[in-house]
Image (tube, rainbow over all chains, first blue to last red; front, side):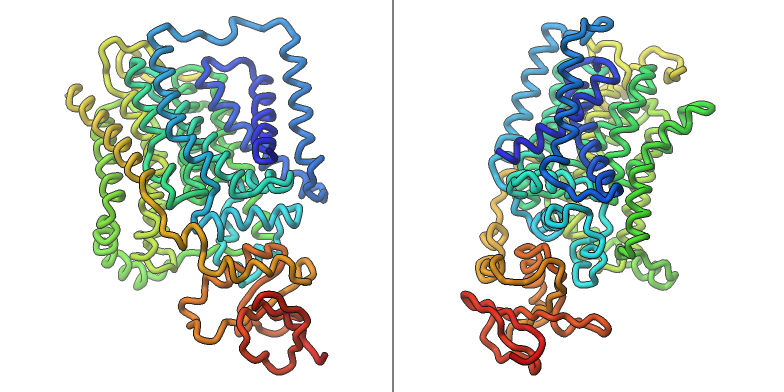
Length: 438
Length: 128
């Protein structure tokens, strides 16, 4: 019960924030916007409480949800502004229902299995328990040398989401499982959005492929942060595509999704930096500052780490070390590829990139380039044993952004009977170039 | 060109779906569901250790350092309110006042047992 309460509280905040911005375009947009805003609001609120010196308590954790409920009630009593939510055509509704069913089939088993993965128990879930017990991001615990195994420098969004449940009395393992199921559903909705220019059947395939992406529902990765990472990467991409397509209002959603992404994991920070760079390239004049706001919460976390003397593992930039690592990288990669999952994901990436060949993607390749550079730097310059690290993480590193890439590829192709969307396909089909917001 | 791109996109989605279904069917090893030290360390939940106290964990005899890691991790999971490290890892000026042992090996000199339950012992620095 408390597990569900924590998630409902976050989603109420997300709904209130989204409602203040006006009605989103479709049901999928609403799901994506509410979940992204709800996750970010939870972390920001917990951070603000800590900054104010207030210990996280049941009442304080629930306070924004209560305020959000009032805002939503007032909004519901007011006459609707504008045209409201656009209804899907009947054929699209059929495919949307199919996509929802496929996503539910992936999400339900996740929801029913309390998280038990190694990294959940000793990194993400452990930090959630620590934060809940301390009523704060416990800097002293994070800086303790004996706790280096828990990656104290990792951004706090996933532990915060679970910790908010633990403060309410929830079992962290059940809370994480329920959150992951919500994230799988939201990821499917984000992929549906990304493939916006494609016909319903293709969008449904994009959504199903998103929900069933390897590693998200894998029992071995139960409770890991990849579902959150995959969803927020897809949400940021969907918002960027909409904004690039001329929906000025999509920028707020982009900032929220990118800000949450930067707090999701170190890979998330790299992806968010890439997204912000891409958006800054598209923006003009003083509006360039708006996407950059997405990096503020992550900057605040870095200041917290610095002030608390909390260190990550760092990187080694010695030329001799890097040369030895570079020479050893092909063998380490070949070793990691003995896992059929890694091999399959590499193949799926290659196919998605092949499908994107020639598509007018604007600045989006910068996102992939930033992420790939960060991944290569960490593998080559990280102090951990490279073959071990690659074998233990490459499936998740490749898997998290894969749903967004596949949905982008599906949306970028020309399909018979496709609607005029705002994705790369739409830009390719008719426009003289990507529309720029005013 | 357009056709080959469509085929590639569909193949990527199909492959991802297939891999996802395959990974969802994987069965975790029993020790992943129930970590090795979980049962042994469960009594720690009731140990009288003050919140935020630095606690030294004594590596059991017969468990080599290379494979002892999960014991420390599980201790942290059982008592996230404490500051954990191995007994041999402590350096001045921090001097832990509490020591946790998970076997019956003799306590190091200068430590006195203050609590015991189901094989878990809490020792306090100093004479009885």
